[in-house]
Image (tube, rainbow, N blue to C red; front, side, top):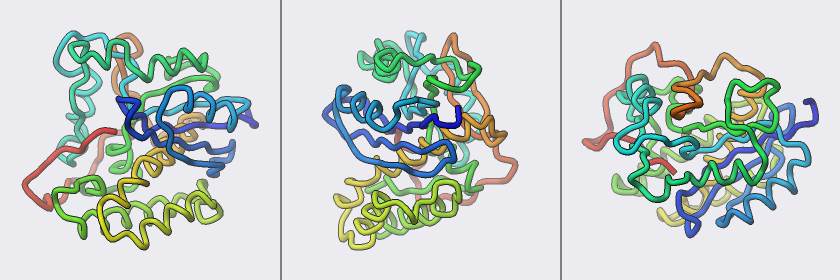
Length: 257
């Protein structure tokens, strides 16, 4: 498994929207990142970057069996992270885009298993969610509002910079050695409006997802499974042992995707 490449996908629920995608090597260092749109583009990019696929961590529902309401795994994540604004939105079969889920279709096209406990952790897709991952990995008191445009550009920019700084603290990613990361950094450094940040936010999430894929491949205790493979699951950090900090504003919750 030493030569396996791990993939992160911040998967848009619709092909018209951007999907952030990234690959890390067996040591966890960023190889490449980009944004794409269609399933064909995603499959081609993965096959180009990862002749040997390890774990593919996807920020999108992978298994949806419930007719309405929240999945059991979403309720578990909400209980652990909701007070940190890292709760989930409901996924169910009443929404046509989850019947079948786009993530499941991609896993099938890439010939990936979807059981997170599968040994070895190679050629397997797992569902992840960046917001609770950030809270857990970075010990945040509340989610970073880098996607919350309604609270104003200055806050969004400040929160984006906080996120980049936190990710650069992940030694295994070696982000400062990456040309793709340097481009993201330049976009953020000169951004004067929300549109510029919007062009890179999915790619940033894709990179974080790739790091989660690598952690899962290494059986890191930093991640655990909420739910099960029969009714759906999310791989995320254990529930925080620290209290949340006060909210910046009245709004709560974090958008997915």
